[in-house]
Structure formats: C-alpha cells, structure tokens
Image (cartoon, rainbow, N blue to C red; front, side, top):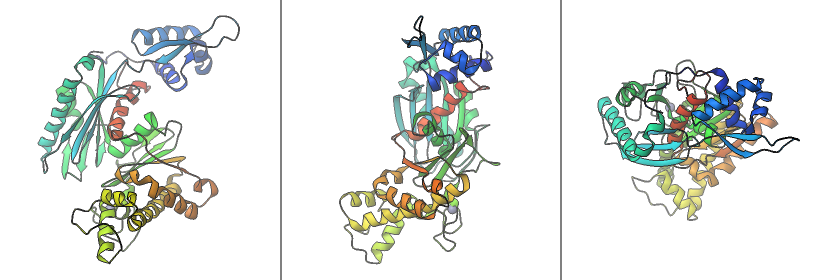
Length: 400
Ligand SMILES: [Zn+2]
C-alpha cells in the first residue's frame, strides 16, 4: 500500500468478514456466511476483494461434510507492516512488525535529558527515519505509526498534554509525525497501549474485561471494557498508581501521600530497602546510593532472605491495590507488566494471598492474575496494536 492511499471507503461488511477470519480462521466462506448472516454471494465478492488486497489467503482445505472439501481462509499476516514506538521517558524503543506482532527489526535511542518539547518531537522524527531506513524493503507495505507515550494523552487528536517524567507539555505528536511522514499516526497513553498489546498479542485475547497494570518507575493501568479501551471523561482513567493506600505514607511524585506508587514502584522498593538496611536489616546488600529494585531482585535470586522478604511485602501491597481494582472494575483477568513484574516468582504468591484474604466474593478472589509474557518490546507492541485496531475497525481510518 502506498503512502496516503487510504481514501477508498471501507465497507462495514468487509470489516465484519475480516474480523471473523481473524478470530475464527481458518474458516470457510460458507461458515462465514452462516455465522455473519451475510449472503454467500456477498461473502464471495468481499473475500475476493480482500484476497486482491493481499489481506486474506486461502490456506488448507477443511473437513468435508459430504461433497467438496471447503477452502479455508486465513489472515495474511505479512500483508502489511506497522511501526510501534515506545516513547520515553529515558529512551525510545522502536519496532517494525507484521500483523501477527512479529518483530522484524528494532532500534533503541537514548534520550539526552533534560530536553525541550521541540527536541523531543525531533527525536521522534529521527527515530522514525532510522527505523524506516532499516526497513526499506517493507516501506510500501507500512500502513501506520503507533506511539505509546507516558502521561496524559488525548488519543483522538494524538496530543500529549503532560508527560510528567520528562516535564514536557502540549506536544502535537500525531500531527508532527503524520505531517513529516504521511502515514496514519495514532498516539495513546503507554499503560493503555500495553492493555491493547495483551489483548491482541498476549494473554488477554479472550478476556472481555482485561486490566493490564504496568509497575515500573511509575504505576499505571490500561482498562478494557467489553474489549474496548476505557479512557474516562478526561483521559485519566487507570491512574491507579495514585490511589491512596496510606493516608500518612511517603510523599508521592504527584504531591499526595501514601499513593500505591510509593509502595510498589521500582524506586519505592529501593527506597524501602535502603531504609531497612539503615535500621540494621541482615542482608548481603550493601548500603549504596544507587541501589535499585533490580539489585534487590538479584540479591533475592542469590538467596538473600531479607531481599526476598522485601519483594514478598511488595507483593502484599500490590495485592491491596489489585483488590481495590477488582472491587472497582471486577475484571476477568489482570496482567502485570513492567520491571517489577519480572520478580513474579517472589511477588505473585503474596499478591494472590492478599486478594484471597480481602476480596469480597469467591469469584472475585479467583480473578486471574498473570505476569506478561510479551517480552522487552511489550509497550511498543501496544503502539503497533493501535494501528492494527484501525485495520479491523468498522469505521477505522485505514481502508483496504
Ligand atoms: Zn501519587
């Protein structure tokens, strides 16, 4: 597909067929007609169009119920490609993937901080240019660029209102990139992009009410309700890192006291560890200024009982936050991502025990809690999913 050639109106029926093949493929034309209530001739015509556009392929032959074996249809995962950008706060992670989320190429770009709004936008252009250069053989089949950005983002306009960890305001990210590259550009808050990544490529495929909680330097959640991202009235839904857990707790970056983030984020774990070492905790960890949550994890792995205890306690705090989340949203599944979730072996048992102890009902206690398996590019994959969603949406901005 050539740049900017998105004019053709996409029919609703075509997107229904495409989504059917995505969810239930390999599937025959007859089965599609039966399950979508479209007439067999309509299905035949639209499938032919989708095959002409490379989006759908005929795969193996299905099982015959007497008569000729039906030809089965699948999505052509290599029809189109997307760029996904995980933007900051300390580095930019950019990937190029096919429709299945397979990473074809990637690059990492370190941001030199502090930086101005203009410098940040220029970095995004530089990174996009670099990944396009690495992807020259796919350029004609790239259909869009997704950007996952921390902080408060207006997904409709692709505008970043406030990026607290970079202290940047009011950046027209989508306009800047689409004016420069003539691709469709979608921008979303990073935790919400992660939720979309789990929904499309991860463990959330079959969860209609999925919450993904990112626990790293900050804490945020992406909420999906009936399969759709929930953003709230003014783009701040999911800011669970700032739910108050302890009225008289530590001061948070937001100015309040005792936010969940002050108990479970990476910096919170290292701060608590340092405090306990000062109080004489028996540990192999030495008291250093740069002690990180990863050091605590490594000590736990090496058998340090104190470090293991710190992580177990962190799991209990996470469990309290998740119980609040369960009582507010009652999701079917919660997936944990971010650096802290890599200590799953130490935090998961106490997370589950806390939920079991505190949740109101038996089914609430049994809410599925998983650790993400998407790997290092999970947020960038969420950015990719922002574009794929458009391809399958009834009124998506990409028409094929
Ligand atoms: Zn806070």
